[in-house]
Amino acid sequence: MELYEIMRTTFAAREFESEPIPNATLHRILDNARFAPSGGNRQGWRVISVRDEEKRERLAQLMVPAARSYMAQCIVGENPWNTIVPTALSPEKVETAESPIAFVRTLAFAPTVLLVFVDLSVVASIDRELDRVGIVSGASIYPFVWNILLAARSEGYGGTLTTFITLAEAEVKELFGIPEEMAVCGLIPMGKPRKQLTKLKRNPVEAFAWHDAWEGEHIA
Image (cartoon, rainbow, N blue to C red; front, side):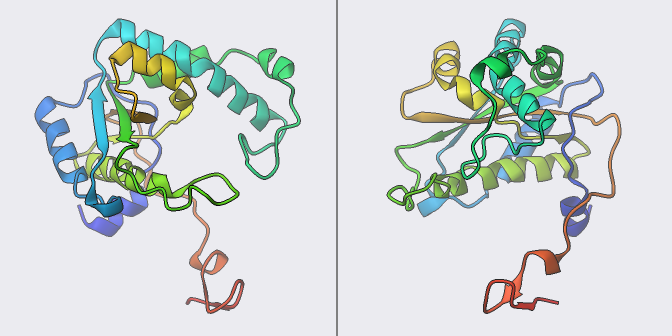
């Protein structure tokens, strides 16, 4: 499959056929994904493929609080966990929202489930002293995650990145014996999509890119 086609058709797949990705194929996906860039080429990513049923059930339970908050904020028209506009919902109001357990179980019980971590002792966090939420550390892990999804698409599979599990980092570390310096970056459910989307909705280049100044001459 041609690269641009892969980029334009790799969507957030959450519903899959039942068969897991074969080990050889999963190895090939990761073998290609590892060529992602990272700060200083330190390659701090680590991956656990979760096959144990009890651990999957525990992951589902651990994702419930974050997923409930996300859904509650979406219902009232908020952008969940926004660092500029905080939520107007109280913790008590969030707790009254419907439990998303059925939704998170579809993620935790996908045919193949990957947990992704990054070693904080090697990432380049150049913006750590700025008076805002840090984002540069993500440059050392999420290109790798996206390479996994692109490679999966190339192999005829699909998946998505969910970060609900990151709020339960302490519990995840205990469950899997993760060293202290590692950060939980996300969970990737993967498999053969039940339906392959071929048209994705994205804003045009003119909506976000300019020459020389903010909202200056469009790049066209």
